[in-house]
Length: 197
Length: 197
DNA sequence: CTTTTGACCAATTTTTAAAAATAGTCAAAT
DNA sequence: ATTTGACTATTTTTAAAAATTGGTCAAAAG
Image 1 (cartoon, rainbow over the protein chains, first blue to last red):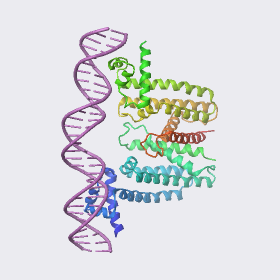
Image 2: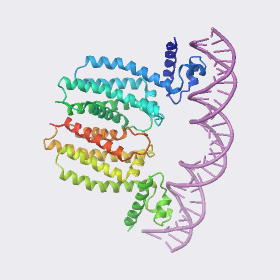
Image 3: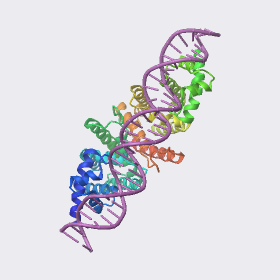
Image 4: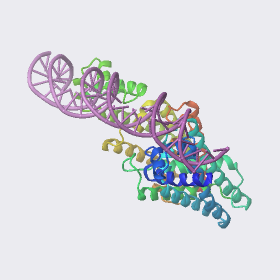
């Protein structure tokens, strides 16, 4: 029952966060949405960060289902990488504001650094699985899976950051997102080709 | 004689820009360094931007000599790409503050966008030459040189942006720069392998 | 014992307006 | 063709007041 209420709160907070962003959402607003007092909200989540964290973990769990399904059904490495990019795009479009804020937020705080490091490592983990699979079934040459996965993830993320936005700090629109995705897929193809047997 | 004076100004401005950054350098300071009046400085350069532009072009010319030499003496594609990365690093360390400012500056202004677009295209041009050479001498498969070069440059730049800095917005130190360079070289190797015959 | 709340605080952010600094101009002097 | 001092318009800094917000707590309600 406590967990049920927590889920309720997570749901309400997620709505606000993903529509207006983290910074522009106050704890009072979340509480008001559920007709709770702010003090009551703090009874379930000791601070704003832990609420955000809970949301992030929920999204991660949600996406894990999709990712694992792909991991089980797709056999070729490039196909898998491309599916991962598509999934990421899906989630990006769905949780736009949230993810955007997450990237730019008070990154100097230790807990934020840890959270984004965790998310990075999780992505690296997925890519590692894919690469290992590729090596095992003889599609890829043997190499240091971890460092190469890290390089791949950094490359893909970097490609997303550096994009010829019309106005660099403006929120990116659908076209922009699609152009980025295309570049990432191209890069993925070349990358895989570069570590093929 | 006009050009001589212009060069003098460029030299003085370059010193200040590369030590304190563009934003923290005033036109008066540059003028004072040369014992000119500010009005006189404006006689040679109509505004701050054109002074910065002149400096950028001078650095570009300077680096062109180094780049062309490499282009003539190194024959294998990967060797060339790695040399380019090393050259970039050299110039980055030399003109640290200047380049840093250039990236983050008032990018919303049209003229700044054009300048950085120009620099991007110049880099793409160099990589294109290298790729063409690789295709011509049979080292690489045939592909769309321009778009692939753009992808490569975007990848390399992205790798530089996305780096696990201890404090994200802090100025990056030597170690960080070296780690980035290593990643870029690794990525370059895989990339080239991916478009090899 | 668990859940809920109003009242409260400290710290941060926003606002505002005045002061200072800076990019850029121009008529006159050299 | 160069150079300058004096001038402006626009930003940037500064500092203080006002408002907002994250977070606490003792006490009430269930």
